[in-house]
Length: 439
Image (cartoon, rainbow, N blue to C red; front, top):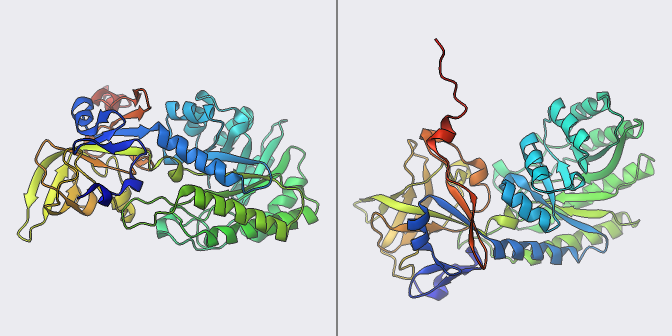
């Protein structure tokens, strides 16, 4: 492989070559794998900041106020919350734990938006008590819970519309079609707006839609925005409130594999915001609400690199190799869950000619425990490091302890330092919840 063949756009901005080795800033990734132990995840701060800047550039195409709100389901930890809060982002949460991490990480309650399709009464009470910026009402049952809540506090609500649109992505990532568990029908949304207008402590302040993730074609997202704007017009004409926040959700795609579309993030963000502005002008024409974007994957996926160590290697009669590493579906469920495709490279001698195709598998007791179905790699030996890019989103947040696997350590790479964000899980951590039998 020549440097010009290397899929540079899949790797963090700080990655570069030196003497046929792959570096992250001044750190040799192979040396890091040996020193830190594997599996290990490293997030590159310059790449995160670059993605934030891309969204801020995109919001310039919206002539009104705008806000970036991070979808914490992609991955959340206390230090990441601190980092994003300091950069002025909002936070999209769906659980009490995510809400608590956000608050402890320095987010003002008004910068939190509570999502989810089946919020328990206790979660709603805690969100109201904390004074979150918005509770995104997903269905009429949830609205009934809020109506019955004994609280003198005002509650700022958004309605999530199900636009009945099929996003061009994997079926498991489609969230805005007729059969989806998420969001209200048009008629239910109007009924909810009418009920909210009649309640003394409920205030409808925004509308939300989200049709799925890993989307590169903006047309379905813009169609969902048009339906959301039409809903705003209908609500305002009925006298049930003025829409102050308009959220088309998140879902912009990022390339994981060299064959994936390589569209610049700022181009997608600008196209989305410009399309939203055009739709608002044509279908509403009134004062502009705040446009709230909710990126998760596209904000942090590219910043992450997963490091593994090669173990057993099987050479098949057809020339293919099965290369086992010390991580798998316990730290990256995406390939098993919906066939997500990745690439990989050994940080030592990454530019050597490929010796043939290889399947990268993990150590767990499942045939579906694989990371990459096929990748062309140079010769590797047991003990060599292997690096997989675009590992920043939906790996650690869906990690498990299957087979007693311990979750990996996580680091943040800055231009000056390598900072531990989460230590490696220990067996004592794993057993801390267990209560020995007393008989």
